[in-house]
Image (tube, rainbow, N blue to C red; front, side, top):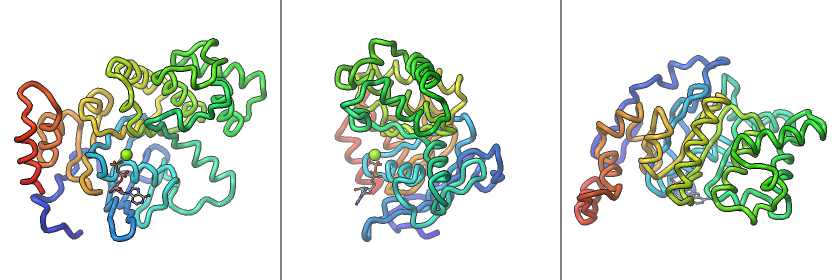
Length: 292
Ligand code: ADP
Ligand code: MG
């Protein structure tokens, strides 16, 4: 593996289970090995590997442009990886799907919630209808059973019949994000990818959604890939974290350990960049130019 000469230190080795330890079998969860993506001569994602155990929660952190979204888009199949493999419980997701059934099965297994749910909800369809769409695609249920399931899913995210009958634009940002989560859960995924899913929300609404997500994970046993630039968020909702910089993982490990005792200078810089008492933007800017 080659390093750019400006890299101050090598990547901090993973202290948790490594992808190579993971058997490619039923309980192995999501195993990502050596993912790479370039746009022209710009390397957006370079040799990214990690593992998400079933039902656990992994944070992918890094500044804007560090390759977080590109990484998860490759996992869900919105983007094709140039190199690397992705397996979920031993099933290879890297090869082109063979037919509609396999494509649907893959789409179902990893669901994504985006920063702006307004873009992923059809403005002409009621909230209940938006959830029902997913059930029609992925479940064998008939109309009556689907209606009951829609009510159940919306209830799970704290929405009632009044919201179910409303159009997305009648809801608040936090409520729309709840709909997006219900829609994702309707597919009964193994993994939920949340890409800056609370970034656009007010802090108090953020807390409510994070609390809701924690409850859902306990109850549904779904694994989370939590993509965020916000280190405060990962502390509350993830068990492990990988730090991306310029498309590469520079540090990875248990969340508490990485946040409380960061070993890579870039992670320390990210932590120091969070505004708090005694925060000094000028010093941060200086440290940043030192890290390169
Ligand atoms: P993040 O989600 O961490 O902000 P992204 O994965 O969106 O980062 O982007 C990583 C890098 O790849 C950035 O430099 C971005 O400009 C570039 N990039 C992302 N998508 C495209 C694209 N479709 N075409 C060209 N460059 C892209
Ligand atoms: Mg992004």
